Structures are given as C-alpha cells and as structure tokens.
Amino acid sequence: MHTLTRWISLLILGSLAGCGGKQGQAQVAGEGATGGEQGNIDVQALMKRESEGLTRRKLAVQSLRAEVLSAADPKVVVEDNVAKVVIPIGAEADVQCLLYDQDPLPGSTFVNIVESMKKEFEVRQVATGAMEVVKEAPVTPLTLVYAAKTAEGTALGQLKLAFHSRLGSSSLCMHDELGYVKSFTDVSRSFFETFDHGNPGLDTSYVEVFAGEINDQPAGHDRNLLFSEQGVRKLLSMSLLMIQTGPIEIMAQDSSSLITVDQQDRVEKGRWVESQNGALALDVELQRIKGNRYSYKGTRRGGEVKGELTTKDPLGLASSLWTQKELKSRLAKPAAFKLGFEQYRPDDDPAAVAPLEIVRRPEDPPRTVRIKVKDAEAIALVDEQGRDSHSEVVMAGAKIVLDRVFERGK
Image (cartoon, rainbow, N blue to C red; front, side, top):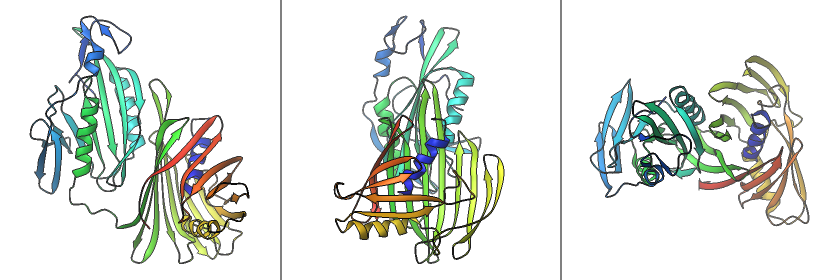
C-alpha cells in the first residue's frame, strides 16, 4: 500500500499536473525523419542491423568478474577515473558499460545524459522502454536518436542506454550507433547477469520489485527490501518515476526511504530523500522521541523544516510490515472491513501525518481492497501474505498501474 501511495504523491507533486559522439553515426543528405531513405543512405535498413556470431567470453580483472556476449575479448579501461567494460559486438561502435563506485540515481543520470546530448547535437527522439529485473534489481532502458552536422552532411546516431540499479554494483551500459537494438539488449543483459566485483551487498530477507505504468506506458519501478542490522529490522524502498513529457523531453523523480521498525512493526526512525530531474527536492529525517511523539528535521523544496508531531495511535506510526500483517489476518475471512491508520509522507507535509483507509466491501472480489488516499480511490489485489501484488488508480487524467514482477523471501 505504501508503494502506491508514494506514486500517487509523486504524480501530484511532479510535473504531470554527457555522452554521445561521432562513433557509429550514419551520414545522410536529407533532414527530418529518422526512417526511410535519406540521400543514398537507407536509414531504416541501418536501424534493423544486428550482430551475428556473438559468443560468451570471460572477463577477469582484479576483483571484477563477468561473462559477456561479444565478438572479441572484452576489456576494462579507465578514463577520467571511471572504469568501464568495453565489449566488441562486430559493429563500428562497441558496447560500453560504466562501473560506479557509488550508486547514482538512475532518473537523474538519464536526465543529465539527455540534456548533455541536447547541448552537443540535435536530439530528434527520446524513447523510454519497459523495465526488466536482473539479479533482483531493475534494468531501465532509454533510447535517443540524434543528428550532428559534419563536413559531409548530416550524421544520424542512435544512443541506447540500459541502467542496472543494483545496490553496491550499479552500472550503465550504452551503445552509440544506428541499429543493433536486440544485440545491445542481449549483450548488456549478459553483463548485468554476470557482473561481480566482490561487493556482497545487503543481506536481505525479502525483496520485491514493481513495474509502473502511466496510461499504459512504462513509467519506472519501485523496489522494497527488508533486512536486519545487529538485530534491528529495516525497510529500504527505492523508486524511479520517469515519464516522457514530449518527443524529446523526460521528467524523472528518484525517491528512497530507509525506515527502522520496532518489535511491534511501528516506525522507530526514518529518512526520506527525493530528487526531481537531478535536483534535491526532499531530505527529511524522522526520529521517535517516545511513544507516539516524533521529531523531524531536514529540507523540503529548498526550505528548512524542523519540529515535532504526534500520532493519534498511541503506539506510533504503522510501518508497511504492520499493514501487511493486518491485511493477512483480515483477508483470511470473507467479511467486509475498514482499516484506518496514519502514514508519514514528508513530500506532502513533513509537519504532519496523513490518514489512510483500506476498505473491503461485501461485493468486492476475493483479496481485493480499496485504498483511499487524498481524493483518490485505488484498487489493489493482495496476496495471501497481505502484500499488494497489483494496484491501479485513475486520477488527474492519468491511470497508474503497479505490478509486482519479482519477489523473493518472506
């Protein structure tokens, strides 16, 4: 339920109400569309090109290990203190996969790339794509078609990107040449599936990944993890909302929260961080003082926030673990019910808690509930463990759908 309400808040508050180069560009005489024939160049044929004869080849450099599809041996190079794996695919341009020491924000990374490309080239098309899950982490694609003026005429290029948001091992693969779309997808996936540099990551007991759609178009993902540190349970959630707002425009919002829960599944403390198009929009920490009293401090939309708040519930804020157990118990029986509790959504109002109501009506199908947030009512399908597996809501002219596409653990 917390996943869906976060997306609703993102939409209400969001805008919905450098790489690239000469390598692999195709010289064309005409202007305009990216398909068909331009001058003596059949651009449509170039866009259909794919690699042949790719085989799996091992890469081992210090602690880095991978086994990737390639046309020749891959190698590791370091440029400007950034390591990248170079993978030949039998094309003019190689596939290159950047390795990050610290996990960057995928939405901010994509926005920065698009804006950098616009400064250097004439970007003609930007297209988002469907997310897939590799090694329990989302892979988000993005494609740009651009034109550059050269002495020989206009050169067309196609930059394909795939960002693997893996904790402690995030990477970005790219290929800058017309065509080779499937080849790039297969090669980058082979890298993501096998890339290992010795970072064990979190020891999670539960992981789930949701794919998001807005008006039937891919719009990002939401990932929730449960883990323990020194016997203390923590909930880590990370979201990417990325939508196309024009032929060459995207809007991206990266969000995360880290919540510590007590033995009663109530919130002990937490931190919420959000960035919009690469700019920090929210960074708020919440700390329990005693019982149902909490203090908060941080920044929101450029201003400082600080104070205290109190919940009506004497036990304090309910976490998603508490909600899950309540729904598991109530949905084990066919009776209608109404479950009300409070949530902390600092993107809405860091100085207060917000009511949330989950209702099951007598006529509702099995395991179906209604979630009332603000002026919206969402429909959710809940599994036998009390976790939502599918939810959707229509508001402000947009239909939001979240589908759980991966789950592991308890």
